[in-house]
Image (cartoon, rainbow, N blue to C red):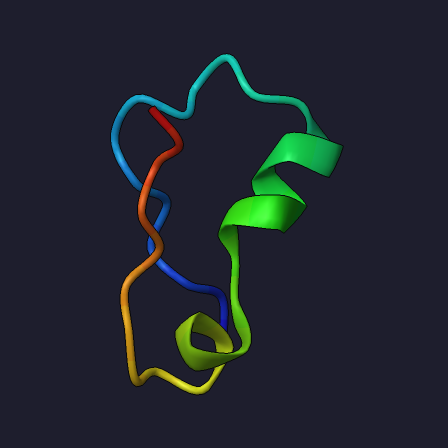
Length: 36
């Protein structure tokens, strides 16, 4: 399962995106939230 990509993250690199995806996102209990 790959979590839905949050809006505003199109310019983030792989390392930055990895920081957005939490355990809860991976198991479907939460949605990823873009950093501000």
